[in-house]
Length: 203
Ligand code: FES
Image (tube, rainbow, N blue to C red; front, side, top):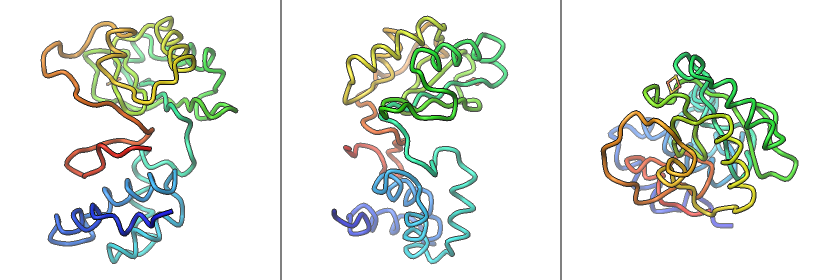
């Protein structure tokens, strides 16, 4: 397997900052994607690249929930249970998804298809209750729609999940009904940020 550190994007990311320590987050994404999760080795490699200590890299990684210390399933189902979503049934959506996927909150299904987690506000309060699949947003989700979404993923096993598509099939009220259509979706259960250079990478 190619060492992710030899990827041209690593040099591009490091060159984008006046101080290479500032590259710690995008490099953690790259390392985590390569290793499958934010492993001890991944953090050590990022420390070497940035001149930080492993403890300093771990301090960053442990603060942000998107850096997973364990591998997750093919589809990471993140259900918001913060105040706006909770008031509009987010806990019921979570319970329906746990039941339909056979995966308790915080765990991964035995076959590796799903990981289910409850999350804090994902910035879609106007479309509560909201959830994400591999960080692709779906708003206005009712419990039955959450169940249908699980079945759609399990039966169809899409290689790419697209928020706009899931919204049309399983969503309800959105925060905003304007804006451009998505050009690409998520192919892995990792966040994809174009400015960080972590978007557009395959499995
Ligand atoms: S409270 Fe759920 S998206 Fe903000």
